[in-house]
Image: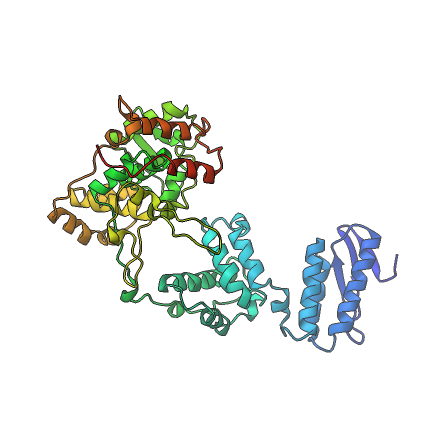
Length: 461
């Protein structure tokens, strides 16, 4: 063993000269003499490279971090910090030892930060943040270490954003940057204060509010009763417009969450992390009971068993794209004979219908037909009256037009009628390629083509 190495009860210690007559001792977190020798070489290399760059206290701090490193990855982080200081990328030891913006952001979006600090990091679905960081933030400031991130870096991110992004998207990107830095303050403790003031977050102008559409009762009836639209999609559309769930909530709903005997539904896990339960509409209960019997659903099976992220495309269709050989799809609404122009328009003041607008349809119809805001929020999970009030103007128009409510779901589905039409039998044949758990086992494109081939446009009987 080298004379500067000493075995201790917890491992080894090494003496390193950092100045004339200055040879402090550092604990090294290794278990073998060979590893201790390698760590001593690393410490001496750090001193040789940075003695004239750092103050004595800063150099000791860096050597102590190198000695404490427990894993190969930790040692590599120290070596990267040494390289950053030696090449002038940063002048602070604290900054050099801190993670980069993208590494810390990855710790947040992966859930690792929440595991370490459950009391201070909120649980959330970070899929949108992952995309924002990957596409817009990390290419600009991802490799900057947290203490070196300044307001100018955040402004650079915003200045590089594509001009076509909507104001709400730009605001989400800004909020994502500030949230990462907020967690870097605490519980990360990598920086002392957030360099991004709250006032920096972009304000959304009123001109950015686009008009949205919802389905009229006769249009919804046409959609749900159209046999040439895949049955499971029609079921999803009908439930969303009658119960007000979010699409992702319906997608993850399992049979154990539905009490068909008492006609209730519970959502313990949802976007707002606020468990809620309510009484289902009687026609939805009857429909779900039929659907469960039809598929033999088990408690842990998904009720729908289908990815609903493409819901907007299913509803409004998609034009042909020559570059990608994508064929035109008329969409479920046009296939069902619903052609109202405003449902499909995309203009500076209006956006085409989305699957989320079926939830808006539920709120509008409920308010127009005398349901209270409390009754609505019990089902939708809206946390404030202000959020629901955005639908009141449309609800008043609905009431003035005497549009009424939706027809019973079980009366609209041809498959549930005593004498089903041949087209309904064909649809059932297509959906027989679903397992008992409700999971689609046929390729989606194959099912889509089969559903599209069933016949001409439907009309309500």
